[in-house]
Length: 254
Image (tube, rainbow, N blue to C red; front, top):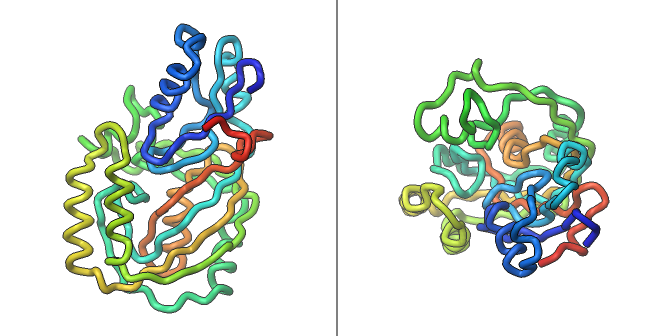
């Protein structure tokens, strides 16, 4: 690891703060040293978590602005309030055949620079508390949610597969159970179970993408926008960050 810069691998279900704590337990010399992450990863996401320590924490903004690369799986046919599996199911669609050429066309429309509101389930602070706290208790009006600039450089289609929703139940259960902390897991799991009981034979489509982007791009939003452009609800089923600037996943500290 470079002095004051740590390329850590964050597991699915682990929060960034929990990953830093685990690092400090493995390397006790860092327990009393200031540490911060440069670029959050959602609990359901995995991959490169860039952590700064000591004097390098003063350069956080510099590392927040570097380009990133992700591999994500977009589940087309189901939407949740968070835009990922760790959310309350809101909409279920039966998915028909989706042509690759249509996916490529819609991907191209997402590439470029866009102004868009922060996701309501995000850690962006507004009026003294993060948006996700507002979303859980007293949702803000759309006009009160700040905008930010998002840059998507490239989107590459890697694969496309079809499933019935019931085929995904065990994996969804396992992934929700892995999550540490209080994220409404019981209510979320009950809703997934009742949804799959009712709509389990619905076809859904899993689209895997590789995305290169600037800072501030939320993969949950990319997944939702792609699915909507294809005529369905959707969510980010799996997110893996494979690169932050020059720091790559193959060199991450497990």
